Length: 372
Length: 218
Image (tube, rainbow over all chains, first blue to last red; front, side, top):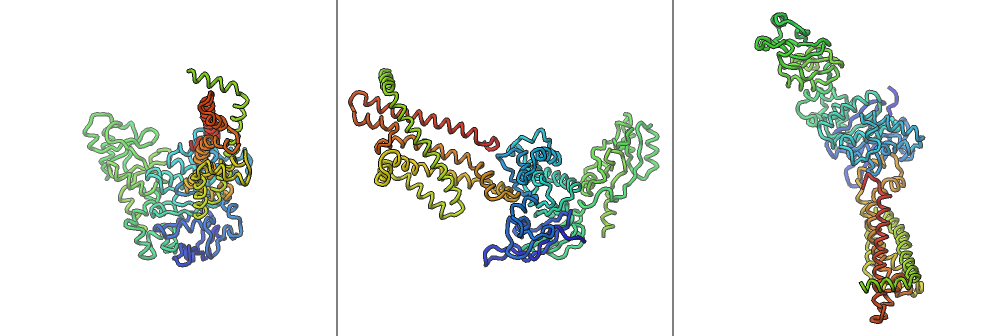
């Protein structure tokens, strides 16, 4: 394996002589392009560890290497310009416009004006904000979620290899947080940055991390592994209790719908005659069929009762299909959709909405069991 | 109505004197605001991180404000003589506290998250001060400067007692000649011009506020 991008070598940080060190002889490597999540109870030293990397805190002992270079040899301000930094409080400059905020590091690095201008638009688009609308606004005009989008755009503006994120979504409401997490994962697939991500939320850690370091007091690593491995083989009682109950449920966010063997119920393509539909239903072990429109997009669940009850055309009987799953969705999404569905299963379509099959509780259970 | 007319007559008869006194008075305000402003802001920046230093600076500035103004103008005469110098020193010392206190309050009030992100992005300490801290503390500092400007306009009237000139000249001469003719007019003229000067300076500072404070923090 190549040289890790970030390497901490037996790093310690203590405040005052008598006190227990906040970070005790921590050795840690972060590979290029991975998201390493530091997770642990509050006060375990995870934020301190993060801030040691960009020298907002100086280590008491030990060494930190970035790209093989000892960070203590570099001017701290120069070093930080090469490392993106996103914090929970966001910390946008309230007296500067969104554009000026994003331009902060490029300006410090002396980029020319045109390059900065086009970079600002590019960054705003990257975080799904319309440049026309937001460029000249001030931070006070943004919602919490929007502010953090700008925070991420600002951190990425100078295209740093490394991004440090300290509970970036911690102060955002759950719905927006979920959306930002998903968008962030999509971004990371494109950008392939090396990210160290601090959180106290194990669910967030499992969702965001390629690897997770579970830390206990003094930033001591209790377990460092992939989310899957930690969920299935917690190293000790501390890790187990930190994972909490429902490790299997948490694991659902790691698997995608595309891993499931889809179940095929009878399909009817509209327009279809009533007896034909009845016959298809009777021949199948399933109680229900899916009605597709001319673009093969699922529209309604049809069962025998619905066919018998009404004299309406078949396109209007049964219950409508409201939510579709797509192969990239997580099993957690699938479970939620199934539980909400009137027929106990969920329709899976491709990205364009074309019907692929159904996802059932049985198929989900089979996949989970096969993990062992 | 009569008295207003006689006041106007009194002023018009002494146009040159009025303009000179007004210029002297305004000169005090401007020169003191600029020097005391710079001095107090720098002192605030330098001392704010050291608990002892900042308390000491604030205490000293408060002491100046509690010394009776009459005395403060007089005690520097043995050192610098009569005229502009002792008046300038007294007014300078008087105007420190509001600006110093507001500088410290303004800098203290900045969201720590903003400073953390500024440092984290690689702004040097001087850049953090000039590009983030001072612009964000500026509305509070400017409010202190306004308070000081009002203080100076009023107290500068005492400069006349140490031969420092200004609008106090009219008040003093009126007082000395009371109840002779034109004595009340002189007192009123000095007082009203002080008020007008204060009003104009306040308007100028208000304009400065609008011009120098970012829309994002107004």
